[in-house]
Amino acid sequence: MDSQQIRGKFRHWMISGAVAIGALGFLLGSTAGADDAPCKATSFSVAKVEKACKAGGRKAAKVVMKGVVKKAKAAGESMNCKTCHDDLKSFSLTSNAVADLKKWM
Ligand code: HEC
Image 1 (tube, rainbow, N blue to C red):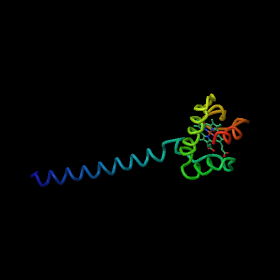
Image 2 (cartoon, rainbow, N blue to C red):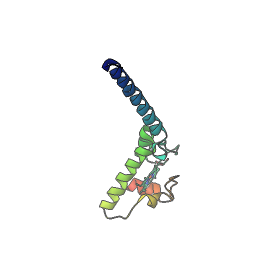
Image 3 (cartoon, rainbow, N blue to C red):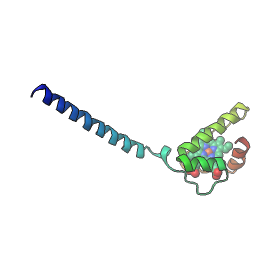
Image 4 (cartoon, helix red, strand yellow):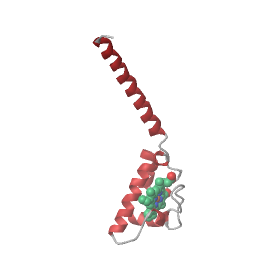
């Protein structure tokens, strides 16, 4: 094999490597689980959450939620996700959730 051929092979590996990594990234990205899932809710009480959900699914909703928790904590309230969600898989709401969220939006 002369150097020309070696370079050619090397190039080929580089390209297939890049394609493989790209495909892997795509697979991981599309199966990354709950975080990338769309929101379960079909009707919303809080416009900002609806907007976040429609734009970026649960991931975006969580950003909104974290902002609320931060704001409440800064004001001296003790609050976390479980203040308003029974569990962090279904994100089912507690009875105070909507009222509390509106208060801290
Ligand atoms: C002050 C109450 C409150 C707190 C604290 C809160 N949430 Fe929420 N969350 C809500 C309410 C209310 C909704 C539904 C909004 C609506 O119906 O418009 C919601 C919706 C969501 C959703 C969308 C669920 C879906 O699939 O429809 C996710 C995800 C979520 N919250 C995550 C979190 C996370 C993570 C935290 C902690 C960082 C958190 N929440 C803290 C009140 C809260």
